[in-house]
Image (cartoon, rainbow, N blue to C red; front, side, top):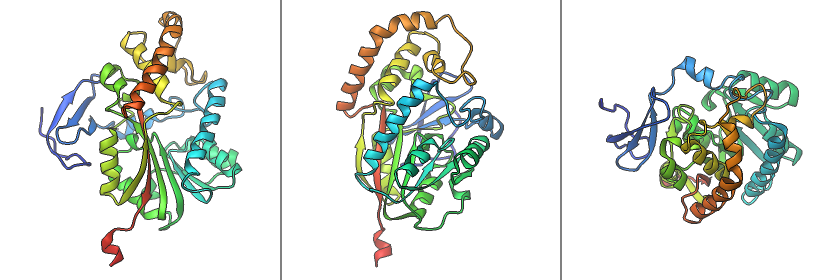
Length: 319
């Protein structure tokens, strides 16, 4: 393996192990010191645009069929309930906001909201159809003033960003003192990841450039002047389905075939005959996946992790 020129951004280690991924053109490097993962190489600018184009990722701000979108609205309510444990109301920035449905929900509940979205068409949809303040591009290009927001959320976004350090430092700058940062990412150290390996649903190479564990995420936040209040290991929205789709992938039932079936018609892949045995297996695999996802979460090895961190003031700034 050629020498790695960029050290691990969590611990600055420079020794890595290479692992297999579902795509031959990409590899997964694991830091020998802290276990943080990295996809190599990063997609080119052209491929990056294709990965997040409207025809492959979302259409009119939505990704799934109506029953799934109804469930997602329920999960948005649960997200807000968790945020309210730290901040009952105020200004909130959602990074990776898509078409802005979560922002609309927050606005309906009295919040002042803004969003960042990489896809111009989705951002335009949110601005023009939903009257939202959504900026396109990277966070550091948005030009927000220092100490602007009470809350910043990155729900399954940080793993997509090429330079997490730059993003986290910008979050720190624009958060108010004591402000809340919420980060949800897949857990590379979860049972479902370790058991199904390259078939793991949340591995999602090359969309996911970085692969966190609870330990590496907490270390990353604390090294950048955030105090982690709590880390949750169970998500009803993410973990049971993640286990289910991972088992189906491992069983060679078509990579993410069930997940693709749940998307809107515009985004859905072509019909595969492997869906027939997939649906036949659901009565068996669904309860297994739910039970296993609960057990892994109780063992603090859940399929996803959600960290709630507060902006602290470094000691050198207090003196």
